Image (tube, rainbow, N blue to C red; front, side, top):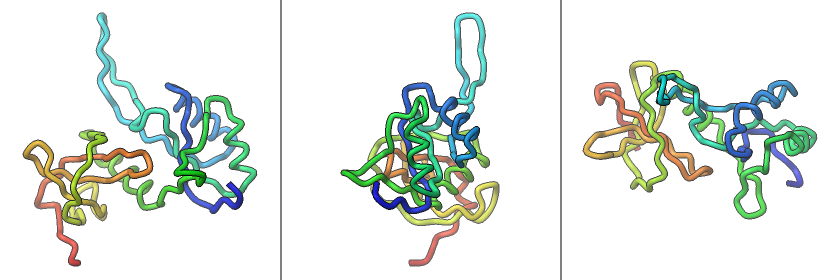
Length: 170
């Protein structure tokens, strides 16, 4: 990476090291984003809600300069930056904003790696996700909003009442 451009990037971590990596990054004052969701885990003797990463082994980092880029690579638990060919992949600010908005707005999140045909572009006009621009797709007979994460080849699906959706004129 010769000239990093200020922005969001994705690092791949060792398995189950996401939270530790995020803590190390925060300790170094490096802006990072680890999207998590509350899930119910069942053991033989108990049930417990835990915060598990939405995208296992991935942490989003905000790069400001080459020094930050190198510091991140030298942290324990980080394996590499996500790349396409030889280029480190930059994540749009809009995608980070959409993910954080969805996480604040609902707990009924589904992650899918299926391919979905492009859906109708809509804007959510009411509720906690107000202002989110997304696609509407049909999944198992239900209409859900879709946020594409092409970098990770994943999609975030959320059910939203249809009265909250407003079509975007093309």
